[in-house]
Amino acid sequence: MIPPIIHEIEARSAINAVQGMPFKWSLNPYKGCVHACSYCYARAYHTFLGLPVSSFESQIYAKINIAEVLRSELRRGSWTREHIAIGTGTDPYQPFEGQYRLTRQCLEAMAAFDNPGSVTTKGTLVTRDIDVISDLSSRVDFTVNISLISLDRELLRTIEPGTPAPASRLRAIERLSAAGIRVTVFLAPVLPGLTDKPEQIEDVVRAAAEYGATDVWAGTLRLAPAIKEHFLQTVQEHFPNLTPAYQRLYGDGAYTPTAYQLKVEGMVSGRRRAEGLGTRPAAPSAPRVTTRGQLALPI
Image (cartoon, rainbow, N blue to C red; front, side, top):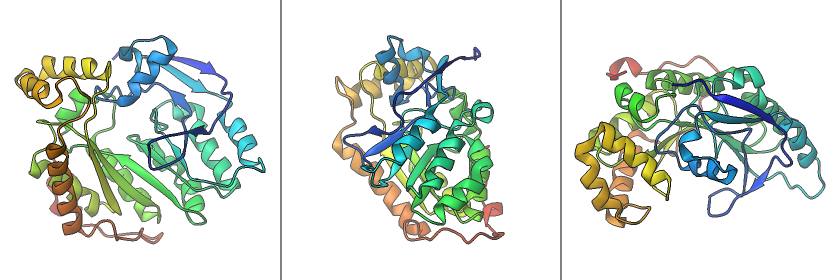
C-alpha cells in the first residue's frame, strides 16, 4: 500500500448530530482510514471533500484541535451528557493515533465530564488506553466495539488489507475484558458469499465469547452508490465467480433482500443465545482464564 498523506486540520465542532442511528451524537478525530476496507460505507464521506472514494485510505485528515473543541462543547450548560459514539466515520485507532493521541485526548475529556459513550475500532491500539477507558466505564455507561467480520486472515488481507489480524483483535478483546471493560464484537457487515456461511458466523461468535466479549452485533452489507462500484471492483478482481450473485442480490439498490437479512440475523441470534451473549456482564478487573485453547483459528 502507498503511504498515506496526512493533512493536519482544525475542527470547528467535535460532537456531530446523527440521524437514523441508535445513537444521537458522534465524534471522529480523523477523516479517512488506512485500514482500506473495500466495503466501508464511510468512503462516501470523501466525496464531500471533492475526492474519489478510492482516496479514503491515502488522504487522511487529523483534527488536531478536536479534544480542545470537545471540552468546550462538554462544558456548555445546554449539553446533557448524552451518549457519544466515537469512530462512526473513520477508525479512531489507526496506527498514527500512536503519534497524534487525538482519540485518547477525547476519551480523557469525556472522563473529565463523566460523559457516556462508546468507541468502535478494528485497531488494537485501543488497548493502550485501557487506563482511561477503565476509569470512564467504571463511572458511566461506556462500551468498546471491536469490528471483526471473519477469522480468515487471508480473506481479510484481500478485503480490508490495512487491518490488524483477527488473532490480534481477539487478544485486544481479551485484554479489554480482563480490565472489566464491556466489549461488543461488531460482525458487520456480513458479506454475501464471503463471510455468511453458518460455520463462519459460528466461529466468530464463539471466538468473541471465548475471548470475553459480552455481546455480538451483526448487520448485512449495504452498498450505497459509489461504494457499490468500488466494492464490486474488488469482487470482480478477487472473487469473479461471485459477481453474478452480487448483481442478483443488489440489483439497482443498496440492500440485500429482506429474506436474506432475516436469515443472517437468525443465524447470529441463534449463536448469541448458544454462547450466552447479550446477558453476560463485563469481567471484573482481574486475571481471567479463557477456553481459547480449544478454538482452532485460521489466523
